[in-house]
Amino acid sequence: MKLAPSILAADFGNFERDARRLEAAGADYLHIDIMDGHFVENISFGADVVKAIRPVTKCLLDCHLMVENPEKYVASFAQAGADSLSIHVEATRHIHGAIQKVNAAGLRSAVVINPGTDISSIKHVLEIVDMVLVMTVNPGFGGQKFIPECLEKVRELSEIRQFRGLDFEIEVDGGVDNQTIIACRDAGADVFVAGSYIFDGNVEENIATLRAALN
Image (cartoon, rainbow, N blue to C red; front, side, top):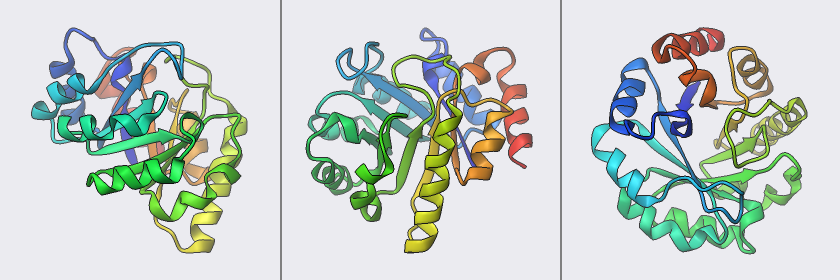
């Protein structure tokens, strides 16, 4: 079970401090939300932020591309030091080719589905990805309420993984706290993105609370 704090909820003026703090507190991945103002309404970070964070942490940099035509940005994020790129099936007309491009760049690949997207849209790429990210809120903004209906997708993916003998991780993102993380774990998730919950109060204590809930 892995924790992936989202730096979207961090102090934008102190990314180095917060990245070091999260790693020291036991974060496994750092989740970096890349938003372009087109695929989602919000605008956040680009490859330069990844490049700035890379030297200050050994955590896996889990970059979530909420952008149109994400295949255009694979090279720039690879050069910036990303470890993993997550691509929305809704954001590209060629999801198989986009995932192949991530794999060819030597990065971990993930395919992402929004709450309104059916699992059937990604079944044909499950054998070539390292992870599937199930959005448990609609993408674009932090601090949203968890959508419990999305748990059924996690369960279905877990069953498919076992039936087909695959080893991709299942990540959940959105509204994750010390209660919803238990439901996600029980449904079959392996990686848990949390932002607002972790940064609302004491970071170390909140990470410890999430870890305790998982255990």
